[in-house]
Image (cartoon, rainbow, N blue to C red; front, side, top):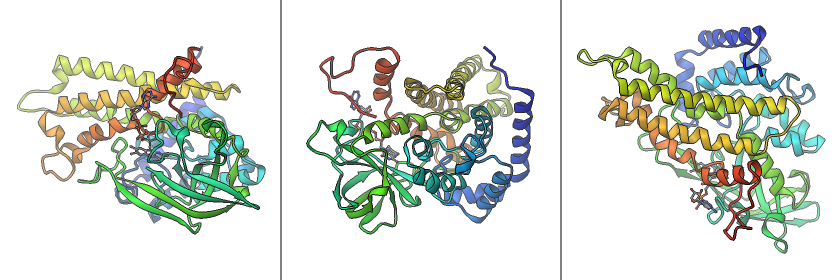
Length: 417
Ligand SMILES: Cc1cc2nc3c(=O)[nH]c(=O)nc-3n(C[C@H](O)[C@H](O)[C@H](O)COP(=O)(O)OP(=O)(O)OC[C@H]3O[C@@H](n4cnc5c(N)ncnc54)[C@H](O)[C@@H]3O)c2cc1C
């Protein structure tokens, strides 16, 4: 087994680093902070003029949609190249990859027309999706969802409510899971629709999170300070918006979520602050005391670094499986456990190392680095819940990875996602 990168891949990494050093100006960082509503590495946010120009430069170098087919606006490149470019940009809070974009699921399950209509525009950033899965009564138990899509001639008419539709206020479309058959077992009557946000009858209402007051600075782990509730009142869409077959949306949705769980940007959400704290420890001194000399701090940082390497290797393993023509199943779930739980452990350790000042939030004159470490601590906990909670992910690893019986067979309620 060869864990090394080729000389060409190392050269590409240096090229991307040099590009970032040259192009990521303080003005761009400021624009990112103002625009992202704290989404950090999410790509489904609006772009200002400077960020748009930056993305034009990135596109010119062929660094967008690297592993996607040329016919859909990609570069016909390989996963590892994609991974290298994604990893370097994710370190500075910029998402150039397509994990979480909806593109992997459309490529896998879409019609030819859907692939041509969506993937090039998802790569260029012209389109972006909000994820419309969760409902007030359907979170971990997603298959209990009630939002209805009823066939009417060549259309579907959608009614219902979605919760936590993050980015619905900036997205062009919602990737919607709705019930199309109520007479069959709950997992079987579900379909996925690609619904334009400007369809009449669709309303978005803000839900402010714990990161809103005061607002989390850019780079905060899951620092989104706004998510949404989205209401569908007689929303009429053509049947061409259906992704995959009617009533087979559970499989399409799970496959898409699993693909979206893996990628450099995903694991770096939980890991990139580790590097900051190492730098902080090395460069700070207090009245003759250096945290870098403290044995407890040195031990902790070394331990966290090892954990971070595990996150990275898990991600690269999944990339390698796909690169060699395979499909990962439980591997995405395993990463979705390890990375957020590492993020929580890191955030806790960092605020302990920083002492009381490390707990001050953005806006306090005494906050360390705009309070980013304290905001990280608040954000890290929810990262173990959204996009499939760690409890549900453990069940998937047990079933799909280790071949244990399903919770239903063991007489317990089964969680979805
Ligand atoms: C900031 C944020 C952003 C989000 N963005 C989106 C989005 O863009 N789109 C979207 O569709 N959703 C989004 N979500 C929703 C997220 O996916 C749900 O919060 C998640 O699925 C859990 O659902 P719930 O909140 O209803 O909690 P519950 O389902 O009530 O679960 C609460 C806890 O109980 C555990 N639990 C529940 N059932 C079981 C079981 N059978 N076995 C073991 N443990 C169990 C869960 O793991 C969890 O820890 C977001 C959530 C947050 C917090």
